[in-house]
Length: 597
Image 1: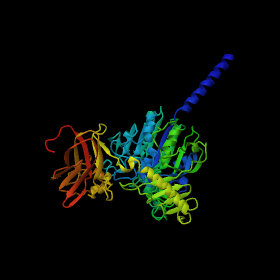
Image 2: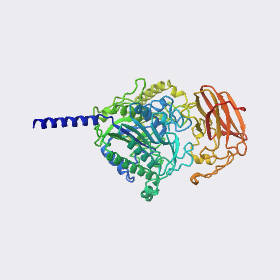
Image 3: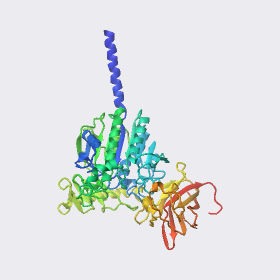
């Protein structure tokens, strides 16, 4: 009996030790970020039409940050999430024109997890740089399955992608996939988990849906067709969200089946206000009682859903945190929850929210949240197109003051009644900007690096070119021969030597003559129209070179010698008296100096 008692005591001890060992393992993290889904596109938020049963169920068990803010467009939000710094401090404040890439040397959430023993993967939309040194694999991801630029099928993405049976990039190499894009992202994420569940993992799952174009299987849009033109605007948009919800439910079941759901921090959020869920005047659709949508500085443009659950960490239960929180808070919060230290030299703009999530405190320290972004290569303006958030106050464009709790639709401008509040917020904004303007990222362009072994060939497109014209960003615009004068790209030459600069009308995966159209029309997707430039001209590092175009040319190649350092490449097609930006440019090192430069 005595020995049996000792044996039982030993078993209890072993069991206790085992449980502590399991609980002491760092949690997994899965961050799901949808694209252009507003705060009103969830059943849990009161939308009377949309079908999101799985996310609604998650909402019921999660902790909800009810006053959570991002930027009104996608790249700045993603940059802030990844770095814990405002877009004005990380260099990525626009969605094109050379300002949709992180600045070199940024510390990302992925790199932080990777260097602390996590396996890291991204599945979906990156939109923080297509070239070295800011591709996902350069910034901390062990596995990257993603499309390029801002959306599937955009001109910088693999030509011919249509959301179905597309070619995406797997650790920077193109690979064909079967199925719908959102299904692919979730399926690949689950494969990654299956292969790496023995150790902690960080998964960033940013879907491109429900961003336009609005393509989805008919079965998902069908339930909303009877409402078209009356209560909702776009059945396909709603159908894309319902497809996301279905995939979310599949992921939840997968985590439970693999017995890793409880020790996984699971987050659902969106990147900005709705793009197509409400009409411009707000009379159609559902927006959770707010005014504004994507691109707007009113609440509907930047307040988004944010739900988080970690059962083993006691972050659960279906309750709300009403403090003002923001995208910049994710990195410090997740780092603390996972027991990861942030290097002291890395200054972050965000706050650690874990004391709120763990119920160790009920309020954050007083602060002001700044929303600055600009769809241009130039820096964000001081007060124009901004929103400054403090407590329940919202100061828009420096002149419109709203109390969001009393005026959810922001219809009553209180600036004249509360001049002291306006003055105080403007002073805080001025101090914030003064500090930001001292950073190199404020004035220097994010540059693609050429001459590095990690990427032998750099692809530049007119979508990312710096210039003052309206951006060209759709493949169909290129197919139709749309022209603009955006023609400048920031480069850094890492290794001195000879380089080939190849200017093209069409991307390499869809080749065709400069004066003609491609022989192939992938998926019979576009109507093609020829252009007829006579010459190509490039300017780079104090060199100006020009060549004529002949009938059979698919590319015009230039050989240049470049010294180490930063420079700009300016490249144009010349057609009569008109010049316009080259659509696709490829740069690669060459070993020997050519006979004719």
